[in-house]
Image 1 (cartoon, rainbow, N blue to C red):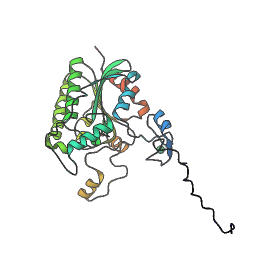
Image 2: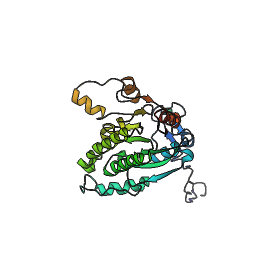
Image 3: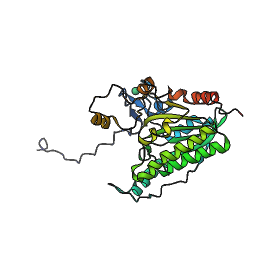
Image 4: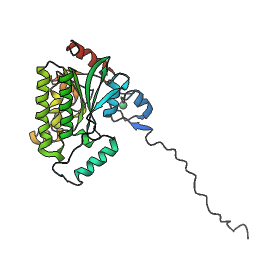
Length: 283
Ligand SMILES: [Zn+2]
């Protein structure tokens, strides 16, 4: 009986209906809205709805600040020698290799020399995607060399920080960078070369405890997390609840720890104007 007979034909596998959307949309960490990545990029990685500043890569940062996005990179070849042959859950060498593959950089900072609103400047930008933007011997050496170049060529210096602090895989060697850079910045000060520190989200640990807070001007991006130890560690240590907005740029500005909060869109014009005021390009 054909009525009861099921004509069995193999079911066709469903055609792939899913559209590849990965990487096209991003969720804003502040207002939770879903944003089209292209809109976000066109807006310098600031949420078009609420203004939340997303993290910016070191390359994008330098392209944004230098005229026509053009600059000469210095000391790109410097790489860590893994002086302690450190290993935790993974070997440090392995972490370095992965970070290099992910970012195309040999360490967590790029030094660029170029024109800022038509005037020469040296700008260092930190890369958070390289082991949390941590500062080891390479970051320290690159900044020290950037300072030497500023001294030799009488250029002003800008450092854009984005870092969790010193790189624990280099132990005391990474901590020594704090003193080394601070000493260099003191020489820059004696030579009356201006240095502006830009603190982006996050700037913590040994970076905030050294060069990030040593600028002639210390300015931050809106909402940036800035501090030494994290809030949980502090709460556990002092056994007190921390105030609302603690360690955010706005809180620090209100308490005299920062000179200004500058939205990303205004950053380049702000740097050009203030470096001019500080006599960066007076002969
Ligand atoms: Zn938003």
